[in-house]
Length: 491
Image 1 (cartoon, rainbow, N blue to C red):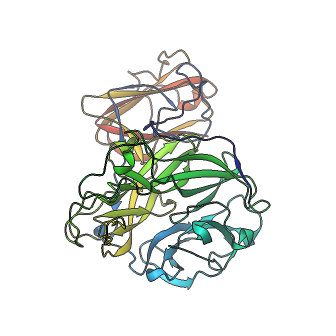
Image 2 (image 1 turned 90 degrees about the horizontal axis):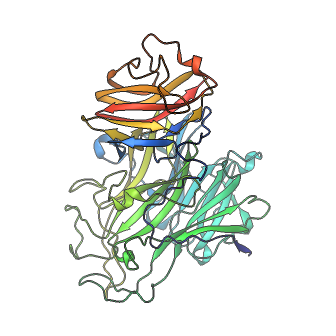
Image 3 (image 1 turned 30 degrees about the vertical axis):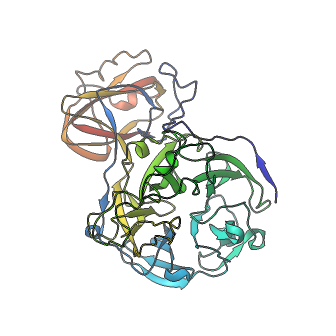
């Protein structure tokens, strides 16, 4: 096998990392076109006053109960050909199966997955490849191959699979979590995300806390790789990043580790779907299996991170201890672990977030005898408003968000905003940041109690918004007890 390393980024002391290009300063125009602009970071933002960035609120389906109990993840749900398609891990190490649903809630098993030489713990992350011209290779999948390394496979129907590289690994160790392969149209390459191990970290000093595992246990991390042509060169993966948590010092691995990470691309933004192992191996809350009480140590949480280059990640939500899907209450099937699907389904103006829930902690083999909890797993579902992952919120005292200047190339402005409890208005500024007559503060309609993902604002006594087409403008959003998620210029 051949491996190339172009550049290496190790996040040992950086906890929040947001990419802002040098030519995207406040006074330099950015390219917007008809691309929807999300407020997950400050890429489009010139100024924020009295607003804070908030994580979106999900709604758990089925009253918080599982929707599928015949299997678990590591797996995938996609929406394709008018139906939901589920690849799930069968219980007792028996491989993978495929199920379908018309409503995303009630799945029926259709077939066992064949042709993939699974090894180890079994995992399968499936994507439909939009770059592929050969129908026989429409589905791509990453799996755990022999020697605890990553294998990749392809399929015409997602059920019967064939392997690249004759089923041999295309990476080195490790691969016992999601092995996620997807086409990246922004960079024109395939990307592969896998687990990696750093092994025991040397020179950290000190000993373990009482009741926790040894200081010398493995340190989990993640790695991302790229390959422009996996059919021609399935083993030619170039390392992009290889890192683990470290903002809080060299012993942070005793507080948190990345258990698994996959990537979803949405509106030109990379979203990392991260399963984070919290207080790994710390079983001081009890050495006996407990399916009633919710634990805070040795558990799994699901966080998101965002990036503009798929290399430097904003980990703010991890360090704020703010999971995207909260674990369930005492006695629930997901009280001690939430492990996401390899990707996100966007359907019917909602994001569908499938996940596996665990009713007990991870456990550890570091004790003698090992602490191995009995736990059951099932698949659940949470949904989120369209583009509602992260928003800019102002409370009732009011706040403003002003965009960087951009060339207006369209006739309509659509805004995704939740102002159901308050109000908002939108002012248009010219290239120099001065109010545009007819679109200034006094002309802006003040909207009360509006909650809309495609709201089109109007201005009092002005020409219509299309009259500004071809000009460089800023948008200034005035928010009162409202959350702004996105805007888009439409023809």
